[in-house]
Image (cartoon, rainbow over all chains, first blue to last red; front, top):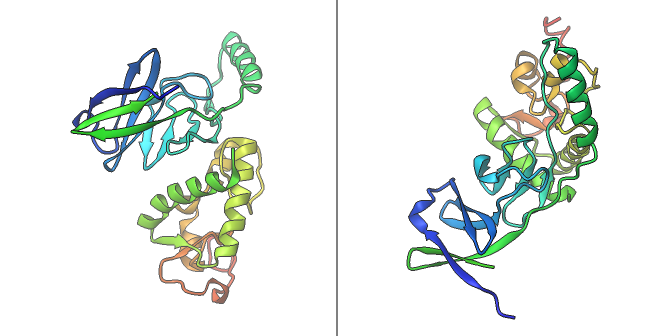
Length: 131
Length: 111
C-alpha cells in the first residue's frame, strides 16, 4: 500500500520556532518549524494526551504544557516524563489534599510513551505530510 | 527512553542557560558524559535533573537549589572556585579544571 501524501498548510503559516495543529484524515498532527525545517508529530502527548501544540518548542525539543514531559520531534522519542508539581507551602483543604493524593497515586503508573512522527515534504510553499 | 538522547537534550538546555551566566561545560569530555548520565538517572527517578554530587534533603525549597544548573543559587562560591561543585560547568576562561584550587565556602568567607 502506498503512502498517502496530504497538503497540510502553507509554509508561512508556521513561523520559525512555532507550531500549528492540523487534523488530516482523522489524525491530529502538529507541524513544527525548526529554523525552516518542518517536522510533524502526533498532537497528543505520549503521557496524558494533552495537546502538544500548546506546549513549548525549543530547537527540536517539544515540552508538553500539562506535565512538562519532553519529546525529540525528529524521532518522536520521549526524553523525560512528568515533572513533579510544586504545591508550595500552602495548606490545602483536606478534601483537595486527598483528591490530589489519589490522582498522584494513579499517575504514578502512567508511562510516557514516544510519539508518532510523520514525514514531511515542502513543495511550492506548501507543507505536505505523509500519512 | 534512551539515555544518550536524554543526555543530548540536557546538554542542549543547560548550554543555553549557563552561557549567559559566564560558564561553559567542562572541557573534560569523559567527566561531562559521566555527570550528564547521572543527571539522566536522577531525572528518570525524580522527574528533575538534580545535581549528582549533592544529597537530596526532601525539603523542596532546599532541593530546588540543587537543580542543575544550580549556578544562580551558589554563584558567589562558584565565582571564587571558577567551577560548579560537581565540575560539570567551569568559568568560560578555564582551560584546565584540574588546576583549579579547591576552596570550601568557609575558606572564602561564605559561611
